[in-house]
Image (cartoon, rainbow, N blue to C red; front, side, top):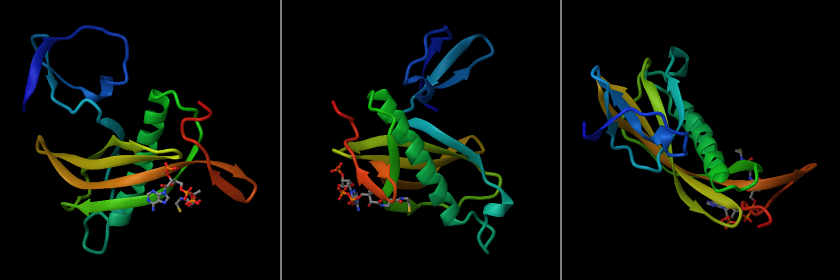
Length: 166
Ligand SMILES: CC(C)(COP(=O)(O)OP(=O)(O)OC[C@H]1O[C@@H](n2cnc3c(N)ncnc32)[C@H](O)[C@@H]1OP(=O)(O)O)[C@@H](O)C(=O)NCCC(=O)NCCS
């Protein structure tokens, strides 16, 4: 695996920290593996027998549910990072969903998010689903999900500026 070598030292937490994968060697050195800087690990889930389809692999709908959840967590992370107010967000669209490979019971699946765009009331996230199989990272599924910042008043819900009043 590609990476750069360095030595472990304490440092204050930053929003980039969980995008760096550290490999700590017995002699105290570390390798910072090359993760793209703006990938955020929103969710990590172990796939269970209850999640399967009639063929014994993981049901696509279960993955979509986790993708929706991970995208919302990633969107909230981006909103906080940009000092936007903590407003409710709802899913308005899931697009470009691609199931590249089957997912199996026992797979430990990571849901990475990347910001794709911020509009007036919406935020779009790209979600990549990966599993570590025998030390090799496999891309399983990916999707783009758009969330809208909303204000709910009784039965009505209306889009509001995602940046707040600024
Ligand atoms: C989200 C909701 C309030 C938006 O209402 P709306 O009348 O469509 O609002 P608008 O047309 O003003 O669009 C709001 C934003 O969503 C975006 N949007 C709307 N439909 C979209 C679509 N199909 N794909 C991508 N973005 C879309 C618009 O571009 C706009 O973004 P912007 O302000 O950043 O430019 C409304 O559609 C809703 O309540 N949907 C149900 C949401 C829900 O319950 N989700 C949970 C899953 S069931």
